[in-house]
Image (cartoon, rainbow over all chains, first blue to last red; front, side, top):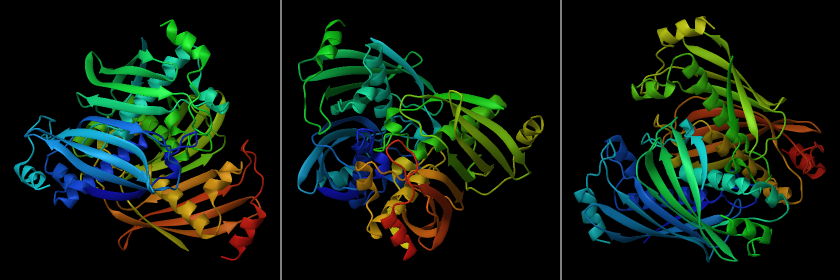
Length: 129
Length: 129
Length: 129
Length: 129
């Protein structure tokens, strides 16, 4: 399990006074990049080599509102993976309170967004989790 | 069925060259607001009266990438509703091509984000769909 | 002079109830891309050829607040240009009301963000304005 | 002088591979909120009492590009203030490198965005800087 600490921003609020639900997608992405960095895989650098890891699907359940300037923690767990896709599970906490849960599925593609299978070195790392 | 035309923005792209997956959440929200406006219900004005319609959950499936400056169309259909929640189904098209599908569930709350049931006048309108 | 019509989005509001000041930067950018498209120059496509037009500086004066779901119009005028940089002037209107003014300076660079001078074909087009 | 450490996000990049220029506006805002928090003034909480501190004008000079996942530091200095407005000066650094400078002017308003003068307790704190 990988954990990333973050902080909600003022600019992420909406006129309803709470953090806009689209910002959670960004929190999940930052946690996912951290999860791969922790595995020794730099997703951002891979893109410069023409290898991408786009989102196939994402789902988020919002349990409690978040407000500007709050410290949050995002947990990432590998749920499952095949040769083609991997699925991650997320929990977002504010202090001890679970505020959202999420799932996302990803593949690996070339620069034309054609699937190329999960990179063998990443498969090896995922197997060790 | 309600349809909203929109256009992807340059600022919504990422270093991978395609529209960031968090922007779809915004496209869906604009279509949802339009869907309610079309029903005669102004979600934005309701918030100023202390009535909110937050997202309970959302899921998006990404089928084809979108690029900056593309015209898109978002279709919204009411999938189901109870006295407490309603679920919407979305399809995003670029020209004739289906690029994403999505679902979202919402409730109505007071300004403290406590559920208050779907407003009776909205129930009446949803029943007529 | 080039004019672009747009509409403020719910997700661009903040907890103060008005459109966040960072969204104006996006409105200006969309108007600038439109200005160049109108001149026959596709800034977005140029980037795929390794030619970029980054912002050197930007300044915005906020005169009146904007709210979610309002129709706006962004006017763009070429203020001046040299062989290296060009400056644009913007006015943002809501109906007849001037809500913001802005200036931005840009150059052209290669993919390493080294200035390459304004492209000769663009100089020609700017001269005709 | 107040300093805030932050980190650029993947979602803030554009198709040109660098952090979009609108994200700097958000970095400045987070640093400004931190500057006031450091002075003992919680700008976010003030808004819940109907006191706002909107941006009157902002200008940013972009010196060097930023990329995803980079650590940055934003310095904030009070430049000047009157009974009605205050001006802040900012420098954004990546490691030792100055990547952007900025200025912003702000006032204080009531919930109708009518100027109310800078709050006396804030004037006192600004005088001590």
